[in-house]
Length: 318
Image (cartoon, rainbow, N blue to C red):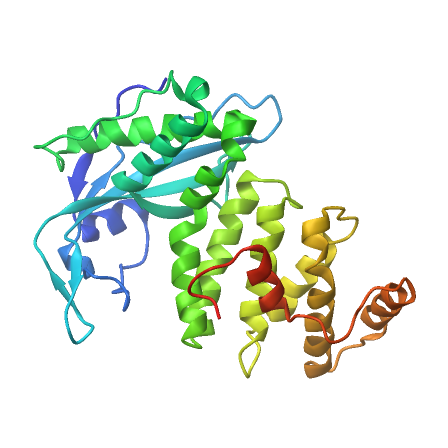
């Protein structure tokens, strides 16, 4: 167990000064501008685990923000209802004897944690029966004490999940990690706003890649979705080749039958990208020829996006 974490309220400016970060800029898609944000900051970093030279996955909530929700108006703009809620910044780290130099993070509300807890409790009641989950409260939701207590409980909850294979590999945990981001990214892709979808998918990939194995189904599926997002716009994303090369390397020696249906569309996508960039395509063409000689259909099949959607249908994806 961690020692109790109370924390304190800080303004955006004081948070930037304390962390040495650049000034917080307004996010055009954010319902609340920076100067309106009320921030709770963790008083100190979580202590490094005893790693014995290995790598330890851990979660930390360094800060939380108190925000009012946004109710869409008829013209599509947002109008605050005035009812506040708390957003927790969940940092995912792979620590050794030193803290992870490249942690990544996602933002989640109490309701996200509660949905995860309820889902796991129904599916694995015996494994979750010892988990102490913070209850809803009617008053005092935004006090530093309560936010600190909840942050500590959420950190312990996530640490426990990844320590139990059945919980870590559950659909509930995967949805918690990527559900909101995939929904937003798919909406942006449908709107042909790939340049905004790619950063969301990149961050989600980094989150999953810290938690699951490099060739896990969820990691490879997200990586292929990222490659598709980088290559389906008229001008490929500047990092398209980087992500495509990583996907090709990850696919070496993959045996999962479900994932193999993505391999030929991935090769075709890379073949077209290499052509656009004036790169040597002989190795990719050789791989496709080898598959064709084995009787595998390599032409006229689904696009990478279509193959992804067949494995993981999303209502927002056409």
